[in-house]
Image 1 (cartoon, rainbow, N blue to C red):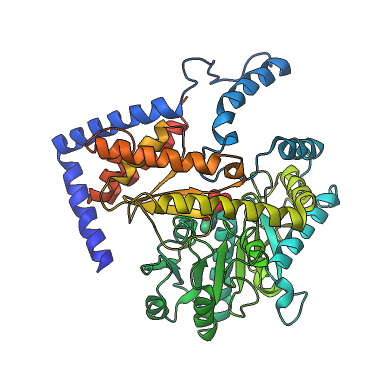
Image 2: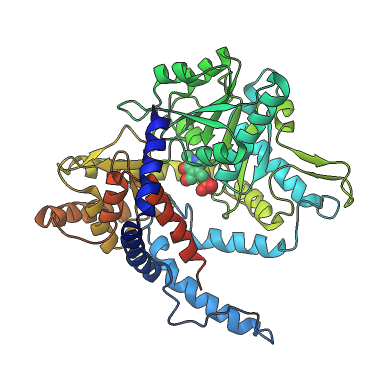
Length: 494
Ligand SMILES: Cc1ncc(COP(=O)(O)O)c(C=O)c1O
């Protein structure tokens, strides 16, 4: 039914586009929107030199460093002072300085060359082992079996895991038309995996608490299903899916179950130790066969690392790439990239060891305490309500006001929050930046003022509100997708 509907929309859309005046009108709208976007994403166009060709003579290192320092200084305040949702998860200057030193020491290192830099392989093996241990990798029957690899981030970990399940199903079950069952609230990286690897996506809805619907899950599984996915927690609403029940259903069908704990992998284990009410999401559940955990989020490493874990090495083998007849020699690599930045692996390893269990426990406690202040504050604003029952990634909506106008009003106060849709909402992922004195309280004050502002002038125009409004109401998904593609074009414009 859904595919018939989208086919009809596609036909109507293509027909509409083929009418010259409709196409002209669409182009005019696009141009206007993109010129606004360009102004906001290209702030240096007017006041810095643009380099479209290599300089004849190289510029001096001092000149370059000073120019880049200026740009960084301009961009720093917003995240340093805790105005940003997610993005920078630690951000203390001493921690950053330490990461910088470690990365400088390893700028030449490439883990692809294990003969030259065995140190990088030591770091990566230990990062995987420490993360597996956090996820109770030692709770499976044969303790050495949980294993994994490093990747460049949450998306790559997810892509790798989905490719792994596709290849396993093809080799062991002869499945040629693989399908994956994924809640609508799971990260879009799963849709990307479906598109890249030719896996049919079967989305299942979430219930009123924004957790995956188990009845829908049972109905969606069929003989082509290769994997079921659950989030711990989900990006939009910070809610943990019923991983125990979902993984058990997958186990009974003898298919894989992936816990996406990219966002929560370095919070949930510590929250559990601190006594917060969090469910099991990891290898203690016998149906869980893989987990993605981002070291570059709440693991506090520099951007560019994540861990994908598997219940056993046999499953991990489906991830690897090997070539035995390439004229360039025997070739093998664990993940998508060939050469990789060893500096990031080194910084990740050094972060895990320098923060340590006590550091993660303290960080988690501080973040959850800041979240409690914010949740209480939101609950006291009558026009707003929190979606689901989140721990530290908090989404809120309004039945009476346009939530995107509130998002814009928060933007005017310096906040960079995330707009969500289906349903319309806004979220903030709390990090250590928000645990600084007064930040959570400032959020609550600013939010109640933003609500008052929108109440006083509910018809105000401009900002993100119309863009989200358009995405919600426009029947032509292709038009929105076109705009997003052109947005990326703008990013690459000089
Ligand atoms: C639940 C979840 N999974 C996956 C990802 C993707 O991570 P990345 O942006 O590192 O690719 C995110 C990012 O926020 C996430 O929240």
